[in-house]
Length: 108
Image (cartoon, rainbow, N blue to C red; front, side):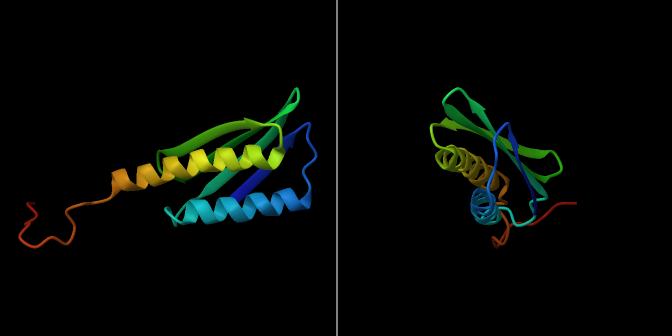
């Protein structure tokens, strides 16, 4: 999965970049192994840090989450939590509940 990390008027250190890459990769690939691209944008609004996360999983499957906190790591963790919940719910919705059940005959 390709991960793009950027900051609007915020300097991002190597520690933050590795934290974002590690956590985002673990959270998304847990439910969707074929995720294509993810983007994380950090910005500062007053005394708060805003984190915008977006993930492109497949055709017409895009998910986004925003969070705001006084600390930059906390804002990312909150946004990632929201994003992981969206991915988990989408995976549950797309699951084929009838696959493998005996007695079901597919009609052509």
